[in-house]
Length: 216
Image 1 (cartoon, one colour):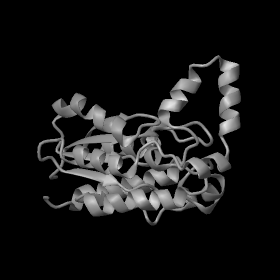
Image 2 (cartoon, helix red, strand yellow):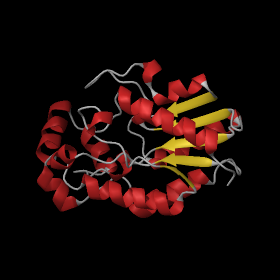
Image 3 (cartoon, one colour):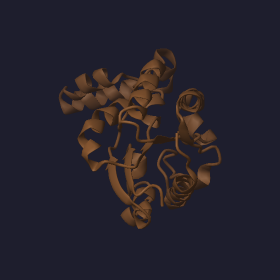
Image 4 (tube, helix red, strand yellow):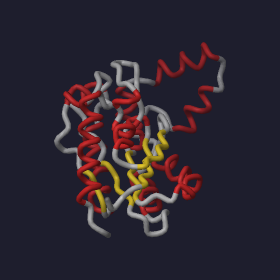
């Protein structure tokens, strides 16, 4: 086996969940991969590519043979406020903070403001820095899951944003694990997180990738 030590860096898509459906710890793709490899998993709910990049220095000592990164949906999703604005609003008294967020959290506000937590140029810079951070160790990215039509209805513009950010991954990343074949059957009813079927599908893809990946 060429790869033994696998470092996994993900947002919440690598984690178990109990809402809106249940996915047990043992059913996540990251944990299932431990059956075949020595895995060090770093998964942060709500993480952007910038957050993942900032974690890299803490895990060099694991000395991975390969790094697998799953990130992007938090970066590209349409928002009604910036992260900075959200932090300021949350510092208000609780009742006032909730009232302000309720007023702003509307499709019309998102369509006018056209905000994402990460601009495309910043996303590009972040993923390139992650790709080049581990001193020649190969770094593979998992593409952002394709949004469903229902998710587009709830969050207008999400399909186009995912397409734009996935295009950056396809053009700039040497090792990309595609997710074009994912659909509603693979995600929870929140339209974001992997269900048990989706986790197993990612596990199969990553395991096959690790078995067939050539030197880069």
